[in-house]
Length: 256
Image (tube, rainbow, N blue to C red; front, side, top):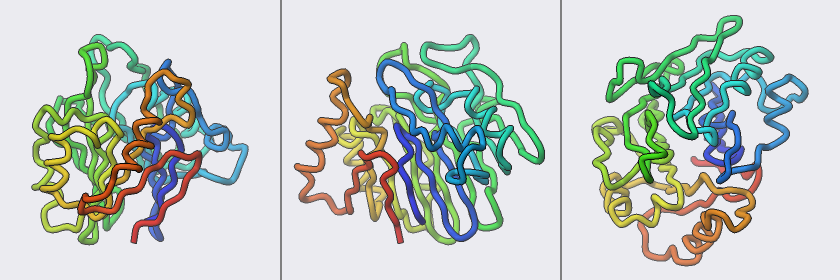
């Protein structure tokens, strides 16, 4: 699987069968500012890269993960198979983009959590499933939103994207979801990585690789997240997994 960091928590994955973009069509807020121009051009059909992505998936509707206007522009100018977006909270919450997503052509739109379900799963193709499982968003109540972490499962392998999950709450159903598969990569943000409850949980599920993502390209002294990621890189010595840190614009990684 080839992985490209498209910014913030945006991850672009490709293999011989499909292309997947997770949280990659996003907006900006006071914490995360940068959006790659290449992806903005792809949304409006002005470049060949990142065009006609098979599956667009979103873990929650915070502006640094999801931008309804950009998603609608992308769908209008590209051939997209499936779009998966969590239902907005009622009423909408701070930092949440509650505007609707439309469809065009043969695009299928799936609303994750429309019935507030704990787990939502759907086949992306004949070999891989997307499994969304409800988790609590980390931080203060002001950031509370309908939040799903995500597993991609198929061909005896799995990839796990925790997004902004709060480790202090139990992460339910994960071991059952990935049971019988080899967990190739676990994606976590820097705050999750340094959490002791998170470390204990990571040891239990035994990923081959842990990929630290959701890092701003420039910190501008506001969050300290970039500095934290650099500290993680310096201090990683005894953990049983391979560590990768996605900190650069359009950084590429291959997981075999």
